[in-house]
Amino acid sequence: MESQVNLTPRFADLANLSNEKLQPLETILARILASPKAQDIYAQIIDGRATWQSYIDPSTKGFRKETTIVSDHPNPSKEAMQLYDEIRTVFTPQALRVDIQLAQDYQNAPLDSRGHDLRLLEITAASLNALAGMIYASFHPDIELNPQEPLQTEYDFFLYENNPFYVEFYHTEYKEYERYPFGLLNVVGYWAETQFFGGVLLFDRGESGLEINNAFVNPQRASYAYQITSQQRANFLNLSTLKDAAPLPSEETLIPFAQEPEAHIVNTWVRAGEAPLRIYKNWYDKPPPSYVPARQSCVQSHGSFDEVMRIMKEKGWDKPRSVTYDPLALEDCHPILRNLRSWKDDTTQRVTKK
Image 1: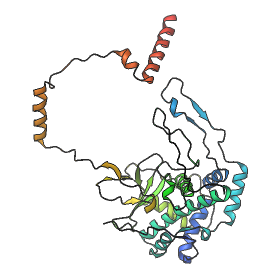
Image 2: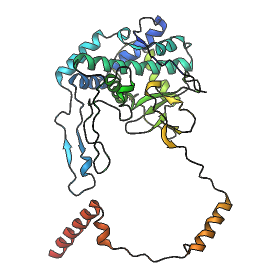
Image 3: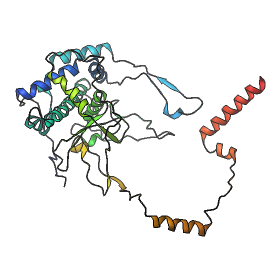
């Protein structure tokens, strides 16, 4: 039975962590924040604009005149990168506001235990997440944390959303700001976490909702998560034992966590009537059960197939039929097929002229 965990999260700074718990967190954050990746991520947040190089316009994908859109903002501004460097030099984890229960769970985890390693990974992600929200709020103070007027979502031919969100920084599965304690600042934090780790970090909370048994990554545009291997976790947590805070070596990419070929895959949602979801980040960002009912078993008895064959014979469906199609009518049903016909006609004309 899943317990009702604290339904009103409280947040405070990390000043109450013991030195033996604070030291590994400080070290691992210092190394991550000194990396070029961190500078790029947080400078984008300071600018208020996400960077990208180019992409195919979804509304033209698969058509003859496929359109490539090139960004006018492929890199963060130099001013934003300088501002981030100034922030990093004075940064201390104690200034971050994180969930009190999360900090207490990290404090209570025995050192040199698997639970400690997972809690350290959890609080590291939460710290990077919180820092993103703090930076966004500092440089964009006019942001409305919980917009009351919902966006009118529109979709193109391929069911891509083609209208802008309130902010440019979001994970596609974590946009329900009205459910989060800090609204859109949490949305920005999930985006930053995704840039670092390859997705939002989720944890197996067990039946009680209070445990932390394994870590998973929920990638962008995905309703599944893959498990982080013990080796990936160990390599990442080795950063906490290093004494210096030098930048992460570019040749050793510890993050984001890549999906290993044999990684355990789980859904990040459940259907109505199924057992409660065990793998999630926080109770407030856990997706509610889908309205789609649980599927019945696809395993059928041999007798069921005998009954199906009897009905097919009665209806005459077991006899082969010749079916003819009108190619032109089919092509007119879909724009891609019409484009292919135009392309074929153009090619035929060129060959004929030769």
